[in-house]
Length: 164
Image (cartoon, rainbow, N blue to C red; front, side):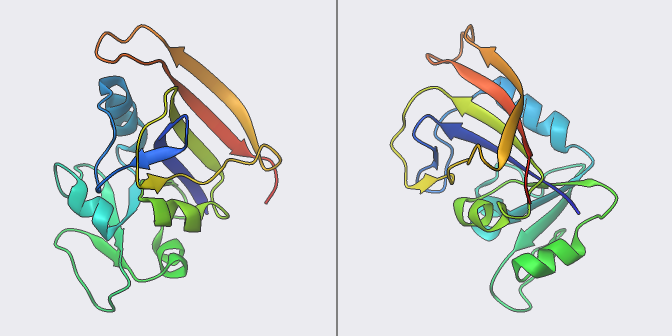
């Protein structure tokens, strides 16, 4: 199975607060759309309901819930991590888009990480797990230090798993 995680992370591994993003980076949102367009996206129920537009268009939206039989209109439903993996598209790249608990549970299964690293600490209640450089190799990095919309530097990074 081809499983990728896509996430924006602050310097202190913060990813969210009160079920919301910590920043607005237009270039990151465009990158997210470009990478996930036409693919499976997997998320927890709280992440799904935090989206400004639901379901995200031109993607197969799969929502994970622990309530057996729960249904959300226009979404595929999964009831465990194993169930999610069984329902993913085996011939395609499947993107895990959050939240924090879902990221932690999928880290052992992921092959690739698409990270937007914000080079600033933020106050948060949700964090991304540490990326162990024993298991992951940084294969691509593009620094953005001239974004007039934000008063911080960020970078687009891609990590590929070295061990599984």
